[in-house]
Image 1 (cartoon, rainbow, N blue to C red):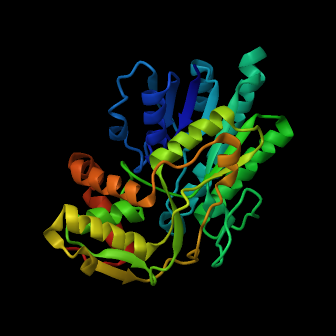
Image 2: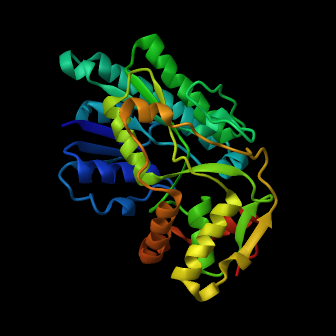
Image 3: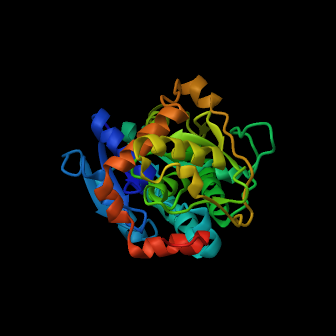
Amino acid sequence: MKNILITGGAGFIGSALIRHIIGDTSDHVVNLDKLTYAGNLQSLVSVADDPCYRFEHVDICDAAEVARVFAQHRPDAVMHLAAESHVDRSISGPADFIQTNIVGTYILLEGARNYWNGLEGEKKTGFRFHHISTDEVYGSLGDEGFFTEETAYQPNSPYSASKASSDHLVRAWHHTYGLPVVTTNCSNNYGPYHFPEKLIPLVILNAVNGKPLPIYGKGDNIRDWLYVEDHARALYRVMNEGRLGETYNIGGWNEKTNLEVVQAICSALDELRPQHAPHAQLITFVQDRPGHDQRYAIDAGKIERELGWKPQETFETGLRKTVEWYLANTDWVRGVTSGEYQSWIENQYRVPST
């Protein structure tokens, strides 16, 4: 049984990870989260009263509070997911990304290093710092090939540059100070409890309400899609079994153009919620994002070979589950789709409100 400190646990991937650990293992979790706009404790109501779960409302940039959490909870592992993560927001306001993703990671690394240096015996040798990152640090692929763990970094947005910086900090703390770390870089996640500024939940909710479905450019940008619960299982396995100092890429082997993704959502809603069918008539092409990477695709062979992990969901099964979840959880949706949020969406994509 481990005591795991998870940063950003009220976010999309973090909450899925916590639900997996509390629901399927005997480990304990301390959730450290600042609760920004994308952090939502309603995503954790199913575990909130579990004796194996605790919550700390803390900013990772607060060194004193980070040190207190380490001293009070004495974790056996850290799984670091806290980050600003939306590319569009990083373009219009990069400062928050620099502060949280770079400075915050530095402060967390120092908190972990000071704590780890004070450990002894099996407690020290068993400690792990697992840094969770993104495939966007690698830049953009051509028509062929895949990102591997050896692909050179070439970030093209303020978001990906800040995550690349945090990856390098984690590597440096391992090689300079000996901090026992593992790093993972994942492809695009989707699934339940996803904050609706990202493509799939945005399209689902707009389509249900008969609003335009904004797609950047011609919709030919390609992403590899990973169901978030598959990702949670992979993260837990890497934390427990990954080799120290190594990086593992986690992907779903599901390359789709943005247009294909939106069309698949429309087809599912035509069947499940036909009020505005055919939903494809709502597709609206908008001005492309500055510096928009053309294609991401992950080679997840290393984690499959070394740790035996493979995704359980295909894109088709995972998307069906996702659409059904949003249709069934209208209370959660109402809780995150405030007027302020809706205004941001309309301004960002320059689509008419209805």
